[in-house]
Amino acid sequence: MFMRTHLEFTSTAFPSYPGEDKEINPGIFGKRLAEFLAESLPKHGFKVLGIGAEDWGWMIEIENREFPLWIGCANYDGTENEFQCFIEPSTPFVRKWFSKIETGPTVEKLATALEAVLHQSGEVSGLRWLSEDEARR
Image (cartoon, rainbow, N blue to C red):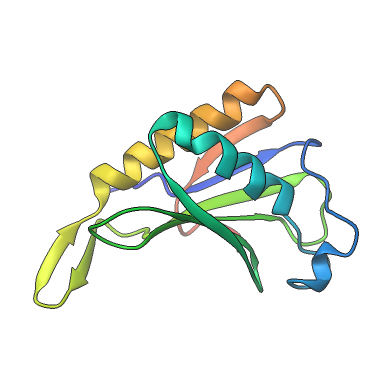
């Protein structure tokens, strides 16, 4: 089952902040993209709990009672305008204690919102969903 969890695109709308890569890793950025998504996703029914720096880019934490849900955002290392967003979890099920929780419907709803936000911005091109095997992290 192909889950839409990895989305790549091109945009000049999300340049790095000066010194941003000192918060994560050299050559990596995506804070402006994370801020844009965090501001836009509530209009699509998702409550954003916050954004935070990770070594690979920026994480947008989404409120979800059943399981941890978040979006990762970063440029492709060494590029100025190629980006990838990925949704976690990227598997159809997660385990919590002794139960198996289906993630697919929630992840698909978030994928639809993510694609709509980026498409409607008019600031991105080349939107393409990747399989997890195709994704470059």
